[in-house]
Length: 359
Image 1 (tube, rainbow, N blue to C red):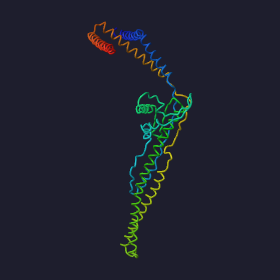
Image 2 (image 1 turned 30 degrees about the vertical axis):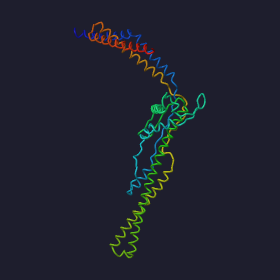
Image 3 (image 1 turned 180 degrees about the horizontal axis):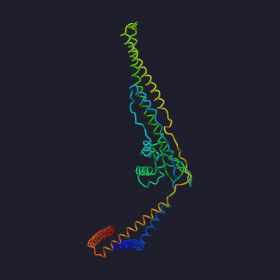
Image 4 (image 1 turned 90 degrees about the vertical axis):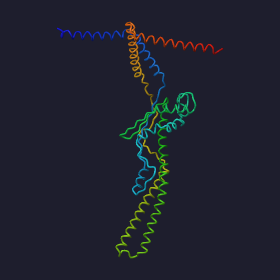
């Protein structure tokens, strides 16, 4: 008999819990619905009144530099060029796009774009809403704003670097993204030119030293041939001749290799061709980005409902403890009353000071 009676008891407990939950919602319905509705209205209104944003994107692949090949070619003959860098990965360019120096250069560049009131020409730092403050403070805020708005994605598998940026004006968005690409190219060209100049100077000094070593080897072979015209009849003289000739050929080979590297570095120093391959050029976006009104409105409804339930739970708990004459709750009430009394005292003191100050 006892076993057969247990399922109905569990069913009653489950029904009782459902009734309690329903009663909880109904008891606090005004607060829950009010908070959820208020947050929903505020969120939706804010999203609808926000300025429309237009996003432009671009992607590129960095090309490998030829300078490392020159250094490797010279290193085969024992010549180590200074300042050799590690291979530049796409992750390097992803970090480069968000460096403060490059961001600042983009901000201080001037852009010309059409608006509803006419054509505007200004720097991006002046266009961003940085508020009041010193020029340094406004520029620092603009750097933070542009860094947060710029979305960079690096594909490690393909080496493609993608970037995306949203602006209030479609033409401005396209021009700013293009400026980022130009700045990356400028950085690469200047870096390559500087590295090629350093390598050229090193190679030229090394070439002069190798030329002296080649001339010394040639002079020693010439002196040997002058002193030993019939060296082929002697095995010892033949061996010495072959050794001097091999050393001279080695010196000549090294010198020719370094001389070719010098000419190559001279061409790299004056070359200004881009070192990134553009896969997707930035274009003027035809339509604005979505505001996400429905998504944020749903989040507001859920957040307001959870907040209302939390407040309702606290109110029920306070009521229960107060009805049960809980000593801990009574102590907490006294502490809250003392705290409120202290705040009132401080507020009255400030009022007395304001009354006395005009006199």
